[in-house]
Amino acid sequence: MNENQQQNNIYDNLAKLGSHLTEMGNELAALKSQLNVALAQNAELTIENRHLQEAIKKLRDQHGEQQLSTGRRTLNELYHQGFHVCRKHFGERLAPHESCIFCDEAIFSGMDEQSGRQE
Ligand SMILES: [Zn+2]
Image: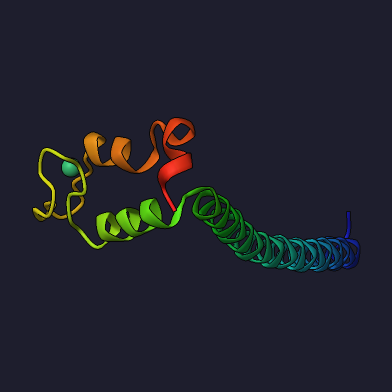
């Protein structure tokens, strides 16, 4: 291999390396844009999911409210404002985040037997 051939070889190799790097750069750009699309979709789905969860919760709350008579609805409101509505502790304050099964029972149980004399 003479000097000229050697130089040509080096240039060839550099040209090959250059085109590999260009190719890799293009692949990297493509991957980046795919990642951006995926991240955007993920953000959209997260928001949509939150909205759906809220809608479900609202529907559940409305449905639950509709099934309660006026008296029970009042008890339910008092209970959510932080007061016991059960016989045992009626009017006492609930501790923050405390729930009371007696209150739940007072609001929600035996609805069939009592529905006649509620309103
Ligand atoms: Zn209670």
